[in-house]
Length: 376
Image (cartoon, rainbow, N blue to C red; front, top):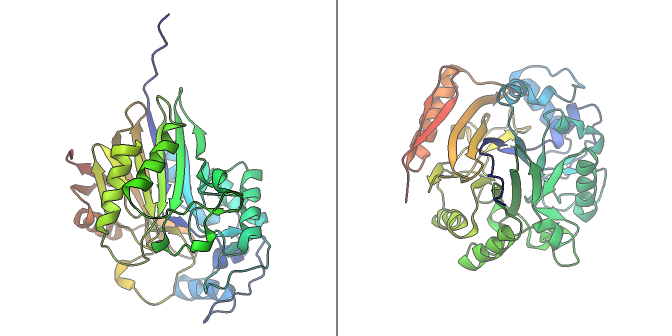
């Protein structure tokens, strides 16, 4: 008997920059944590709220759980992506066992509905802030997210769990497999690495071909026909448009050898270049998406308050990118608001200059649409 043919359907993913719901964001939500911080210059998370209000006007505290997403919710409803994946860069905990690292992000577990308000399917945890409140904070984070019905990837109670992908069932027989890892150059402490019997994050030892081979084994063990494999990777420094040569080489090897369909990069606080390699999407840096940086001076030339929602439509059989649409927003009053036409044009020009063999143009809604030439 012949096997039933695989149903072919495009799958749209929602990806975005870092979602940082700790500190000032946590303070405006219904259940704020203790605002005391352990930073060298700011002692209270309420100071970040005050800076945002001084920059752009009063915030009606406490806000509802959906407030922070603002106009992005309308876009999510319009596109209706099959999978919504974010890099959650905060610990979700009431623990007081903070790490002495200068900057610590914490959100109260009772504020987890701010994530379900956007119907987030998966929170990536392989980054340099999910263990800001120690191993107990990481355990609390995983517990809170799973209780809310949100899948996690990139961290766990041991190495096996940290390496296990989140599996999101989508149309037909397709699944989205979310693998996640981070690198030391993003600020992840070596001591945070998960081990055989120790909790932590999936920390890559290096960007060698040997590491690619290990990822390839992992992907091959779970990826089936019709599955789309996403590798979320937290890498690189906070500022600067340059993409290190080893990052480009590693990303391409992930596609060539590990059968990754979408490389979803983040860490920098601003958007970085996009490459389409062998019809697969490489997002080298998605920037931030939600943060409490309003009113903070420095690095203004990067205009990091301008953020993008990435809607990547992928062929469910080949894993090839069919379309990449980016909706532009600006962070004002700790909330996502639509970007102005001028800001959308600035972002489009920026990404065209930064993109590697691709360019962006604006559609009638002032969304950024990527076009590219096929690479070999």
